Length: 636
Image (tube, rainbow, N blue to C red; front, side, top):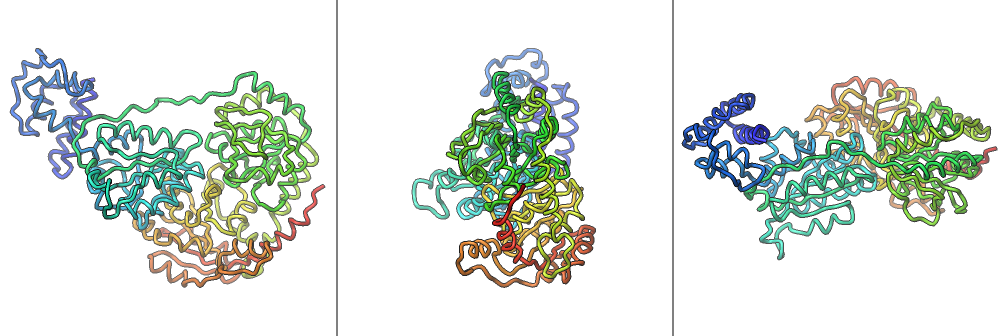
């Protein structure tokens, strides 16, 4: 214990001495000689300007009770004559420093945020830490970055803001993480507790405001609870189903003196799996079905269960459809892959569900795609496989629920199910879908058809490169026409479905995967919602490409208005010169002027050592043509 605690002390001294090069160097040097307590004592006392006692007391310890039990061994080592001075100056620290130590203990490497008057103490503590603070241009951008960071890594992304308007600017990104099941921890500053009971400048109850959009959130009212609060926030955020948590830190608490150490994290976390009786019952259900189909959701990707999914599908020859956020769980080029389901219209993939007598829903989340669209008659037999029990829905009533670790559950099913022959019907359906994916892939019409755009983008992107889709009409085309071969290579917000996620999300993706190509595929509406973060990307050297599908309006709403037989209203707008806008940010700008230019422009853009913006006119008349086609769809 004395070795561990001495390391903590020296680490804290090193942080406090960062403005003094000599002290910082000495702290590191002393940390290496941890087995020399006499030298440590003399060094610590010299540094703290405390008179060192005679060292013979080290062999005659007299201290039996320390203010903090975890410190007893170390304080015994030091002796009572130095207790008061060293306890006060070394063991105690600002609450903000303890909070940062707890964040480091959780493995936090990056925090996205903005500075503010009420988080000055926390910012100073971050400055002295190993954590990288990414200063953004708007808090919504910070929350989206943390959102996508959590989605890609499985570890909670962290965002920071000040009180009041700074905190409320986080709302959209926090809500998006919560419904898209991405682990996120938001930290907001707050006014001092002495003024929270009355009307006060910039004060609103952020904890109450954030309650509907988080899994858990709290205000720190006593500094000594910081280790518990931080540990709980990360544990809850990262537990299934993952989501957002929030910690509020009032400025007077941040500045208060306290003591404590981070709580230990679980060394390993083992999820349970269903018992043999449940597995046997599920296997019987699968073996007796004639036209089973698998619906794979984002839970498969979160659970790192893609290989187990493929193994089960290959043994049983059961075809797999994925939700928008499940793209990549089943490689598109696999002969059992049926691509994405998620349109409210009756798409080719829906025909597979029409035929199915058993739907095996694996990691499926109702927030993405309501079951009434694939089980409108409420007559499907459903096998639910997920980390958590199923949501209650009249259109989703599972016959059997296998609740536990998805990967191990699928492996158990694969081991016990009978091998079978692939259905001719589903083989024909796969051929329909493959032909559809090639439609207009080489069409030279201008403005470009969305099908041509998806094809050319896929040709330029590698299998592990990452496409971040914003929200709009293009999201439908990405989900439907852009093949995915690996998990987490197509990021679509389809729970909260928030516009403006792509540009900040691309920054986070590039920080997580600096050696991959990152493409933000955006509409002209969503792009301008967080365009300011291009400056953030340039400042931190995180180059990515933004492909803007330019139609001069909110194309998805226009599409829906026409489908509802109302005249389009309030959906058109003007745009800036995107090439000049790119240049204003120090980025490279391109404008596509004929169909054949898109692919070479994309290739050149990815060669740049800076951000690139591509203005690409799109013909969204294809939206209505798709609606008409799906309305006449017959698959035999």
